[in-house]
Image (cartoon, rainbow, N blue to C red):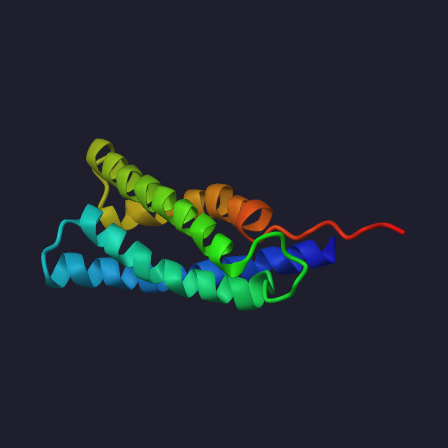
Length: 138
């Protein structure tokens, strides 16, 4: 149980690091360069995803071991699928909440990010992208 909590904590730290990069890029592109926030979310999401994948592979899920089901290429392909859907949910969710609840996009984005990160991203990364092989029982 403690090991699962530690892995969850590491994954959340990795997500926060990637999310911080993602969020900062969104703010810079939107506020300084006047790019619409939905586009800024996509660009920031891609760059933040690179940070998140690297940290998850090497630290959170320690996927350099041979005990994982998928090769690095397959993990990356699965991760891209997760990230593209995550970006779509974050962008559309932020837009919907900002539009219909009349909230600032920066606040809406944080609310949507928390939900997507814990419910969608963590689950798919742990149980699909970085899934471990079952050890044979002797």
